[in-house]
Structures are given as C-alpha cells and as structure tokens.
Amino acid sequence: DAGITQSPRYKITETGRQVTLMCHQTWSHSYMFWYRQDLGHGLRLIYYSAAADITDKGEVPDGYVVSRSKTENFPLTLESATRSQTSVYFCASSEAQKDRGAEAFFGQGTRLTVV
Amino acid sequence: GNSVTQMEGPVTLSEEAFLTINCTYTATGYPSLFWYVQYPGEGLQLLLKATKADDKGSNKGFEATYRKETTSFHLEKGSVQVSDSAVYFCALRIASYGKLTFGQGTILTVHP
Image (cartoon, rainbow over all chains, first blue to last red; front, side, top):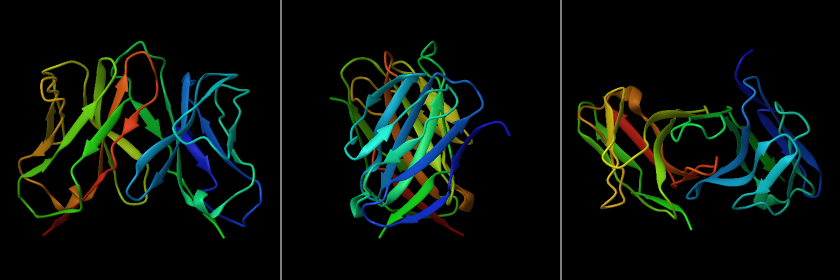
C-alpha cells in the first residue's frame, strides 16, 4: 500500500524495557521525522533524517535512538522506557526542500503506554 | 529559536458559526507557514499553507493569510460544520530545513 505506515498502532510496555516503533514510507521521500504528541505541548520533534545514514536530534531526543539504513524505513527505539515516554508517536516524511511549501505526510500514530 | 503560539482551547461553536483560531510565530529566517488538521484517531493532514508574505492559503472553506508585519497566520472559516470538529495545528518551517515546528494545537468542537 502506498503511503506512510507505522507499527504497532498500540503498545504497552514496562519501565526499563527496550521498544522499537517502526515507520515505513513508499514515496522515497528524503526527509523523515519522529514527533511525540502530548497534551499541552502539541507535537515535539524527537529526531529527523535528511537522507539514509543522516540523522539529527530534534527538540526532545533524550532516551531515544534512531537509525536509517534504507530510505524507506526510520525506526525509533526507546532504549530503556520510562513513564514520561508514554505518548502518541507520529512518523512523517516529506520531499527534499526544492519547494518551500513541500507537504509533510504523517502516519496514523503509535500510542505507547509505559507502565 | 523558532516557535509557534496558538490560542488556548478548546473552542466550542454551534454549526454555521464563524471560526477564528489565532496563530503567531517567531522565526530566525523566512518561514513557510502551515495549518494541519487531526481528526479523531488519525494522523495529521495538511489543511492549507502559505510560503511568502501576504499569501493566502485556502482549502475546504478555511483561509489563512501570511502576515509578516504581525508575524501571524490566523485560521478562519465563515461557517463551520460538525465535521470540522478536530484538532488544528499551526506550524512553520524554515526554508533551509525539512523539519516543522508546531504550535500546541487547538481542539475545535462544533455542535449541531
């Protein structure tokens, strides 16, 4: 299916466990992003990637790790989950910046609960 | 740094009422401005955008004008519908980067 897909849609994990959220896009977009959505904070950027093997920290990167060995995949790993990482996580992708108004496309989100 | 500030929510309106959601920004550089909408249980979708001063973005009856002098991008709709109930996010992007900076979101509920 064309588009951007995240998996799983829902996840419950225990404090201290490692968990990986998956993101796959079929457009070959250069840019990919991970955001977390929390009430009162809107969306905050965790990490982003401008191309395969190029990643950079966003606003709230602590406790997270990303990799991008292939253009279409951008997994997000919580190395040792904490309750403060309970959130809804969104992956997004967009074309390279040829167009100032290039649209970012979002996945449906992963609701992660850390207990 | 770059930031976006939206009006506090939630906003509750009756069907056919006029809607305004305020958005102001601070940016280092010349941003493009966006409004995204999130319907319940879904990801964000682009609603409209503007890439330079005085541009007006419009879609589905919604409008917003890029005002550089007031650093604002307020969202308006003349007559809202129940189906417009959603969370609305204002965002900016500096031309040389791919990442979007979002406001905190405004929950809109429209009653019949």
